[in-house]
Length: 226
Image (cartoon, rainbow, N blue to C red):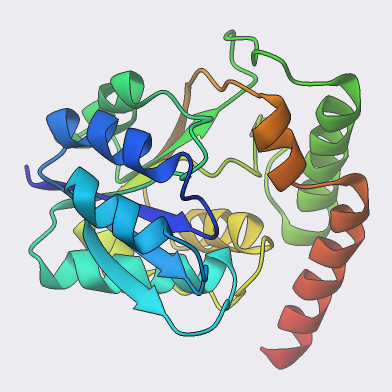
């Protein structure tokens, strides 16, 4: 099956080339969406072998994923993988994400940081924040508590799922919105353990405690718009 990775990137000129090079051996193509970075993110990604789509303005990771997913669909993807550009995810384990789809056991697969593989370098504050997000997703979005990592940015889906996927959040709230949409649509969905490595650089660019309030607000406003 034709696997295309979609990588949203904002000011990731230092890491995006390494991520692209590591993805090319395990995918058929890599699409990087430069989300209005203003640095060399697009140039570095293109030199590393990615197909690059650019936003003139910074619209947010959710918007970049919508653009990249549509582009991958037009390229003939049969499986679309979403993966971050900061190097936290381990591309060598990409087959763990796609295998349940290839074997016909699932329509969409989400990587989990909390299914036996302890995240490397994750501070306690980040761990607590993600646990709180899990409770919020259960209470307000109806996502089962058995779901261990509703904020995961690493996921794979069959093209049929991608074509019907409806998520409107431009910012970080897209993680919860995508998961809710897939679960409610009745697709076969599962989680698999993935290894995530945190560094000082990725922590500086990642979500902070104050971002949790912003995500909640985005989800509430999104519900009213619907």
